[in-house]
Image 1 (cartoon, helix red, strand yellow):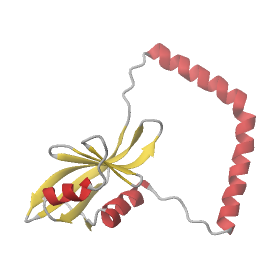
Image 2 (cartoon, one colour):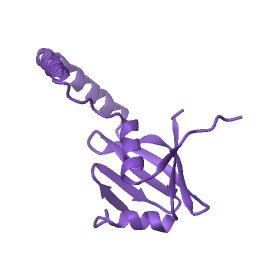
Image 3 (cartoon, rainbow, N blue to C red):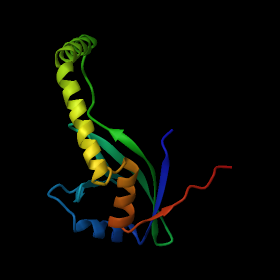
Image 4 (tube, helix red, strand yellow):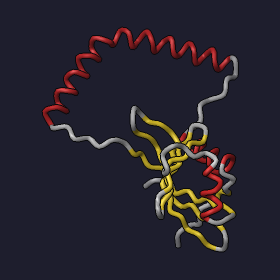
Length: 157
């Protein structure tokens, strides 16, 4: 089961959407904020946290819960990607091609692997910061950019 995150925004749904309006794009449902995408639907809001592949990514899917002039965002991080409509034969053919490519390109992979380890070692010596995790990206978006407050999960009784 995915980890559930809860954030609190002090203000109404209208004030939150007004805050997002400064990041509006040509498309009426999407807002672009730095490396993040926000999609507002009727009762749900999707926060695009991290890209994954060509057309998929990790999204914080949350419901709007408005109470006492504040909004509670409660949801989980989910992978949302393109639908796969290939047949079993096409999938088998793709696996065969992938295996053949792997065999042909394995020596090149070994060279790049050692080069990446050398680059990692140089970065470690120069104390370059590490990459952010998906959770850190979500916290950065919600707390620093959207001024929400994280609420710790209460244990279920």
